[in-house]
Length: 282
Figure 1 (cartoon, rainbow, N blue to C red):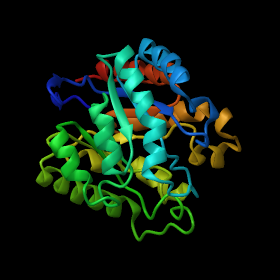
Figure 2 (cartoon, rainbow, N blue to C red):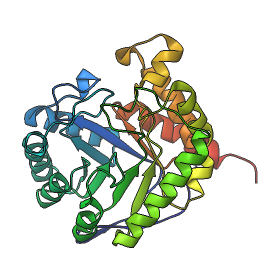
Figure 3 (tube, rainbow, N blue to C red):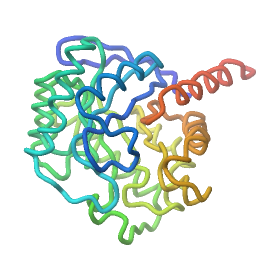
Figure 4 (cartoon, rainbow, N blue to C red):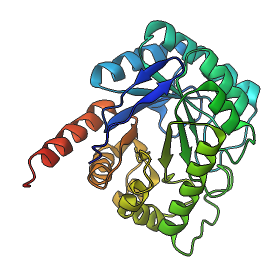
């Protein structure tokens, strides 16, 4: 369980995250793999109110699907979907920490201008050369994720010699690049399901302790993913119990942030794991 205290700069205010945190997913897209997370502005306000009441510390808004096989889309459509949602959320919940899930610097910049206080980038700055400098100027925390390929190609034939070593090295390099660009607060994400087989995903889950050794908070996105369904023979709508199991393992292996569709259940995992950690001898 993560214990180190840190303070994030959110544009013009300071925030001390009490890890572990839960990040709730709001998809302003018509094609995300879990239909219940798809929202328009009104739906986002209702879902966000519930998530915040259940204990979410961060609301993550995305306007472009990144599920396997997804086309790239365009920046205008992505912004058209996500920015009105972020603006409405910020107006209704001004103290909430809102994240924009995008790999495009133009969308990240617009999102921060309209109320976002974090950028969550599946490409760790490799798909848009302006992303790191844009985030640095925005003075917000940044999530750098590992992905092999792009959403369209990543599950075609993912391959590694040693997935844990290669992903950890990649995240170390991107962490350094982000800091060198002037980003003070960086979170790393091994990218479960982004260019990985089931075996790769479980190897990464076992290897979270070596990623935490890089010194940055580790975010995990395991919620209702294929690595659960391939083991249990379920679909996303039946994968909540499997998600709870994986989130528990992730926290015990040092994860700092759980990115989830189901905030209430994730917060229960946080409380149980915290009690377990608090009651260990020594």
